[in-house]
Length: 389
Length: 121
Image 1 (cartoon, rainbow over the protein chains, first blue to last red):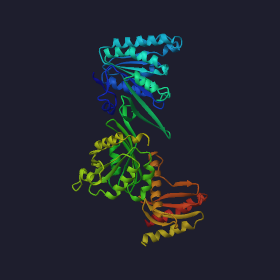
Image 2 (cartoon, helix red, strand yellow):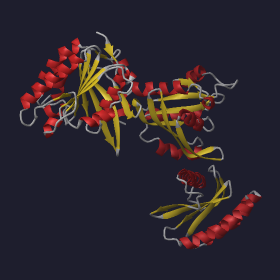
Image 3 (cartoon, each protein chain N blue to C red):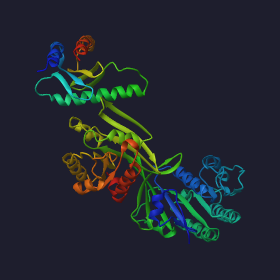
């Protein structure tokens, strides 16, 4: 069986290349996560990969979905199954639709839904297809109905090289006495949980793969360009004059620095968007008299860059920072700046001295910054402390 | 004591004499203290850093929101006020005051002092 890629590289790595053709994927979404937005990001990515698309919608008018799907220039065919209009006793102009009213005859509605889905998949069978069922909330709790549905569509999907994605809002299902999650794990080949943690007004979103049983958690956000890894807050700190502001500015798409007479007096702030990664950077002042700023800027961070001047790394100050960051169990790496200068120590020399992962950069000329971001991201992802701090 | 600092003491002392003002300082925009008259239980260097930081943030915000030059940055707290105003390209004049101080009077007194500080810097 070959693998089908998901729109986030990190997920594909964790799943050995993606999800299997013909498999059934449950996407369980916390209420704080906009599951339809996630569905459109997934669908648009798969359309770019030349999939066909069959999108079953039963919770809103199909035009809302049509507006979000970007099928212009897509090689594959797109078909919507309108499972909603009939529940409002309205006609539908979609190629595929369910005529039965769910409220009038539930089992007939289900039966027609299965038949129509199979028909749609078969009619588009020349290509691999992405099938989206948005959403299962109508059947929430009726897991036997869900199982029937999945089992009946499954073999057709295998024949037509489709992957079936079922969306379900998390209406409070957890492991526990009723074992809803365990039951769902029985029904589906993959269970991908979109978690949304609300923290003082900010929703922190991350993907948690519940089945297969691999420890993978990926923070994400949905941008107009699609799905990206997202870290709300990374700190850029380090000794005076090491190039922290330059690092923030050249890593970021857009940055603001509060600096006077060449010194950061309050903070630097920048927004990074590169290589499928989005992050907010906060730079601290470097001079001792601004140490208090580190206290308030350092709250609720996910990871930290310590920028040093490779010609004079100021090891004492860095060791003190290291101590503080280790006490907070925060991931951090050293950026050895000014690698373009002749008398710079190499990243290896600095790493050996400090015993902290070190990446060489030339912040001014944007050298090594991609690698720096990737390295810190690896540290953040390999240590799961970020999701509860 | 440098002569610059000496010359700054006069306007700072004048401010300190105003009712409701507890101390005054002249700070460089990067947060270094140039001269102060703040009393013993206040950390001068901290006032320097805080002043530079709040004024810097205020000015950056004002610029980003197209609101023009900043006249004054005031922090109103339960038990006092920190009032800062620019004094030339490199300096900031800042005072610590009682929370119920007469703001009209402060404006006049600080305006006079800023002119003197500018001359010295």
